[in-house]
Length: 304
Image (cartoon, rainbow, N blue to C red):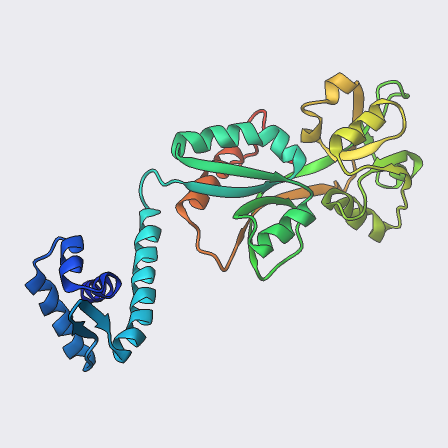
């Protein structure tokens, strides 16, 4: 069916008058009548019945009206989607970031997005990777950065960076050796995230097959709390080096390398497979790759 003819037909049905519809459409009434007549010929049904006070849909017209509105709405939506290709689209991009990533990455990310798409709004949600992954699958996020997520048929992953964990202790404790073996970790009182945390899962996945059982004295889900507990002399922790960028010096901590083998995390960019990438998502992906190039994260941007 011709979308223009459907538009004219809906206009007459809504206005209940060829005259009023022609004025609204800025058309000559004869042109409008001719196009509606062509549509009636096409469907083989009388669609509008003229009355003394205007025009009303026939039974066939009422049936077509439902479909016509749906087709015109679909065409309107298609045009709106194509506008997404415009150089400066507007809209809201829902981004999920682990808290420590947000601390180091949110500012440069928002800054670069504003340079690229000044009319777009970046809405950041923070949380642990497990929760952000669920929000992404549910459709409540458009894109997310996740630590070591399990495979999912619903999500596409692009690895951004991998980073080795360090053993972190208080500066007031005896000096740490340059490197600590995996077995030796069992001798330190440890402060780690809970088992649902991706960082804890990565530590356990390396130590458990080797029979290394850690002495866990406390658990905390926020990295800043972990480092504060360590800085206060309540134990040691194992975190990637970038987590010390903001607070390592202030808290007076000391570090040692772990392994071999090293314990490494994996930061990935996750997007839903079922949803096509919009212009906002594509530009955000490009921004993320600028902040996390193949040779490592840019200065001042953490990888954890």
